[in-house]
Amino acid sequence: MTDTRRNLPSIERLLTDPDIAALLDRAPREEVVQAAREAVAAARSSRDLEDRNWASEVADRLAARGRSSLRPVINATGVVLHTNLGRAPLADAALRAMHEIGRGYSTLEYDLDAGIRGHRSDHVRELASRLTGAEDALVVNNAAAALVLALAALGGSGGVAISRGELIEIGGSFRIPDILRATGARLTEIGTTNRTHLDDYAKALDAGASCVLVVHRSNFVQSGYVHAPSPTDVAKLARQRSVPCIHDLGSGLLLELEGSPLADEPTLGEAVAAGADIVIASGDKLLGGPQAGIMVGRRDAVAACRSHPLARAVRSDKFTLAALEATLRLYQEPDRARREIPVLAMLTATPAAVAARAQRLVVQLPAEFDPRTEDGTSAVGGGAAPAVNLPTTLVTLAPGPLGVQGLLLRLRLGEPAIVARAEGDRVALDPRTMTEEDLVPTARAIINVGVDPAAEADELS
Ligand SMILES: *Cc1c(COP(=O)(O)O)cnc(C)c1O
Image 1 (cartoon, rainbow, N blue to C red):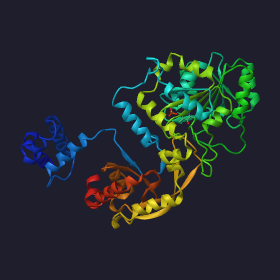
Image 2: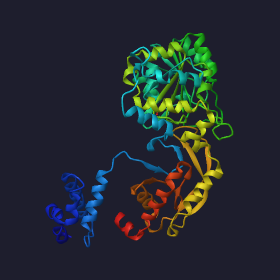
Image 3: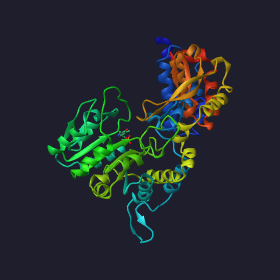
Image 4: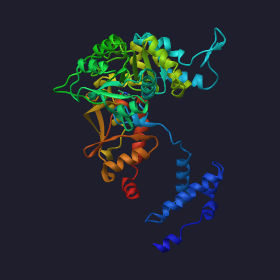
């Protein structure tokens, strides 16, 4: 070992290799030197030093260094709203709007008619209100920010009444009780984990609670001996007592998806009709738009949020507003929305359409992976509709000597990167979350993995 390590080339020597020197024409010297250092460091920790192709290794590492850290992947997991993979892919109309607005100046905070300053949220105000039946709308950075803003503006000092069944964790670092406390609001827990009654809200208000918060159980289901009053009854009670009611809906479905497994998911319009002062939803969940916190509701409550000092700290940027306006415009024609908003298209894709896509992929794959189509299920994801399973057709692969985890890793590290999932002792790709344009690059990446599985396995170990 010691002897072979002594044989590692110096960086200077590597740079005299004509193939490596040629890289200097393509990339800054410092990048080539770093790539060469990485190649030597990798060789130092490797057992096998024979026949190293230094030029190709340095070139590979240089290419990897040149790739963006934030880059596209093919989502073959079948989880439509995959938070770690960026949640909702945007509609073409939304992408065009972002490009238009990003490349130059815009009316972001400018009223062309009057030639005076406008408000950035005005661009979606009328549209969001109309589509949800609300009096007014405000858009902020995300739903978590919307909740913070609503609690700060409307929470008051008497305590925020919330059912123990709704003190939920949304994901990683977002727990409703922690958010509540962080805004300085006092938490007034009412009811029990499984059963809360309207009377529990009434008692909390009798005891001085200054706000009511209703949180949609978006990422889990309760069944059995459970009860919660309807959002309509809670909102009515709050109104009678002149106390604001905030309803965190989370997923922000805008269309009824009749006939789909999501038919029972509450829509934003239904939540607004239930009468809360503010309804909060994410822009990048079932709505299928950019990351945003949509706040819709009564005029005075939205105005209080808009003029609160925190509104400035959680405001949306122009790309978001451009993409959101374009996405909302598609909803003016529901059939067009279902077709052109990728999240809605994926969620409502028929079993036959997914099976046909699976077929178009499987025929392109090399026999060494024993590619097959199999029945499976896709998930909505993004903390929405947790009980809904969408029947799908998977394309599965036998991983061979790489093993399931080894093949998954090779797919992630390939170009393009593919995130697939394990199904027993096979690797599964779900075409529901892949576009038609993903199929050829996916097949090519799998073919590249298969070039020499034994050698690849050795490299991974
Ligand atoms: C997802 C979710 C949130 C957080 O939404 P972000 O837009 O990710 O901040 C808040 N409340 C509920 C009920 C949710 O489902």
